[in-house]
Image (cartoon, rainbow, N blue to C red; front, side, top):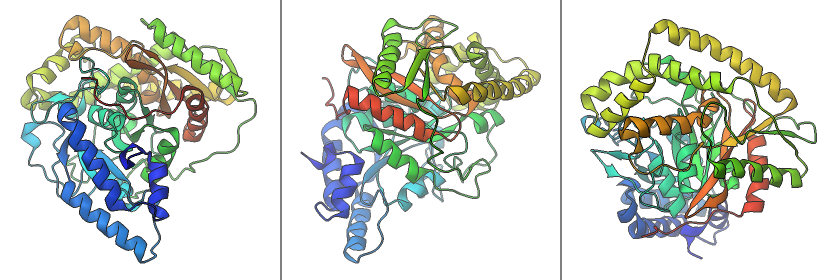
Length: 466
C-alpha cells in the first residue's frame, strides 16, 4: 500500500516509529496530487518546496529525539479563505489575490504545532457562499465520484481532496453546512464543531465579522476515517486567547447514562426529503441499535422555526455585510446565486435579525433540554441527493438547493457539533447522515460515528470516475 492511501493515524504512527519518513509521506502525497489534481482542481496552490523543507525539518527533529506532535510529518491541506502566512487569503475572488497574510490563522498554526505539513491550499466558491466550488480566480473543482455532481461547498476543494487521497486531513469551515455538505457529496467524513471549540478568526481581518457569522461559522476537519477526525479535532482545538469565542472545554465529557438514547429524524420538517436519505438515517439507527443504543424516531423541537431563524440572520446580517462585496467583486455565477437566494429569502430589517438572534436562544434552550434525555439526534446531512453542478443559478434550482440545505442549518444556528458520516449509497454517490450532540460533546458524535463506520466500512480513496 502506498503512503498516500493511509489515514493520518497510521501514517503518523509509521513516521513516529521510523518505519516511514515525513519526506517519504510528503513525496507520496505530492505524487498523488500529480496524478489526480489535474482532473479535479481541488488544490489550487501547491506548496511542494515548502512541504519538502518542512518534512526534512520534521525528520531531523525526530532524529534528534525531540518531542513529536500527534500529526508529526502528516500531509494536510488548508482552505484558501483562512490566513496562512506569506500566502493570499483570496477566498476565490480575483480582487483579493494580492491580500497576503502576515500571520497564520489559529487553526493553521494549530495544525503546524501538531506537526502537520501543509502541502497545498484547497478551492472554495467565490466568497465561500455557494454549494458549488467554482470561481473566476481558480476555476471549477470536480467531484471525484461524478464530475457532473458538485463536490459541495464551500469546502468543495477540501472534500474532493480528502476523497481522492490528496492528504488524509483537509481543513474546512462551515456556516450553513460547508464542511458537512462537501463531505457528504464526496462520500467522506466531516465534522462541524461546537461554537467556540476551534479558534476561528483571521488575523488579517480589517473588521469584526457580522454577529451572525460569529455565532454560526466554525472551522473543522474533513477526513476519510472517524479516528482521523478525532485526531484532527484535538490538533485544531488548541486555544488562542485572541479568539473571543474560544472555550477551553475538554475534548471528552462525562460518561452518559446507558443506553444512550438516539432520536432519528428521517424526514426533516418543512420540505422534501429524498427517500434514499431518509433510509440512510434509519440504517444508521439500526447500526446503533445493534450496538446497544436506544433508538427511536422522535422529533426534536422547533426544526422549521430554526431553519427560518438561520435565514432571518443570514439575510439581514450575514448578507447585509457580504452582499455589496459580492455585487462589486463577485463573478457572474456568484452574483446570480446570491440574487436568487435573496429573492427567496429577502432581507427585511435589523429588527428581524435582532428578533432571530433572540429566538435563537430559546431554540437552543429547548434543544438542550431535549438532549438531556436524548443526547444524539440523527438527520440527513442534506435532505436531497447531491445536486448537479450550478443548480443554484435558476430560481427553481436555488429553491431546491436551499430546501435541501435546511437539514444542515439546525446545528449552525444552535452552535452544536454535527458529524457527517457516509451511510449506504445511491449509484456512484454515497448517502449520508449527520449526528448532532449537545455543546462540546463531539466525543459522543465520534463514538456513534465509529459504530456506524464499523458497520459500513472505512472510506478509501477514490480515483476520479472519468
